[in-house]
Structures are given as structure tokens and as C-alpha cells.
Image (cartoon, rainbow, N blue to C red):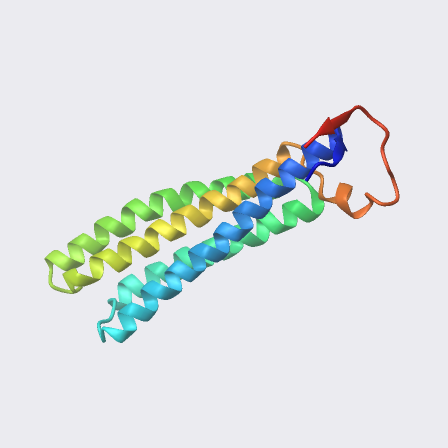
Length: 164
């Protein structure tokens, strides 16, 4: 809209929009995975037990990462950010490892080759979720201050206006 924002308001608003975009992306990726799982169930084909365990472990890591990202939003950066980045590296390594393991299972006849596309899509979605979690943490590290918005009405700042 045609409002006037201070420099700080503009900076904080841009950061908030960036973070909200990643939160929305997490939702979309969850929907994508749900669709992949639903299609797999409807086709009456199953991932091997090993593949299911691997996906469960990857999703648990994403759950931890997202919880850490939310914690960072609420409390600012600390050791949690470092843990989040370590988990991100683990997700990157896991993606490569799980794809190789899947291809070996297909070659050994343990997994159905037709499940390669949904399995790979789920791994891709997990990888992108990891990216979004790290993006949220990096935005907070870049000084997006979520407490700024909670006290906005109380502390109107007089600064150089910026046109939107």
C-alpha cells in the first residue's frame, strides 16, 4: 500500500515476510509429501521397511530442525543455531545416502522401481524443508527481531520515513 514506514519498520517487515515465506513453504512441502504418500497407498505399493525407517528418521530430524527454528524465532540465536546447521548438514548427507540405498534396494529387487519417483520427491521435499529451517534461523541471525512486532503499537519510532 502507499504507507510510509521508517527504515527500521521496512527492514523488520521485509525480514518477517521472508520468514513467513519459509513457514508457508514448509506447509507446501508437507502437502507435497502427503500427496506422494497418498498416491503410493492408492497404488497399493509399499516402501521397504528400511526405506520407511530411513524416511521416519529424516522426518524426525526435520521436526527437530523446525522446532529449533521456532525456538530461535522466539528467543534469538544461541547454540540452537549451531545445532540447526549441524542437522542441515546431516540432512544433506542423508539425502545422498538414502538415494543410493534406494537404488541398491531396487537393484536387489527389495524395492519396486516404480517407487523411485515418489521416494526421490519425498527426499527432495525433506531437503527443501531443511533449507527453510536454516533460512528462518539465518533471518533471525540477520537481526529480524520478532519482539519488535509485538511492541510496535507501544513504541512508535520516529525515524527517516521509507516509501513502500
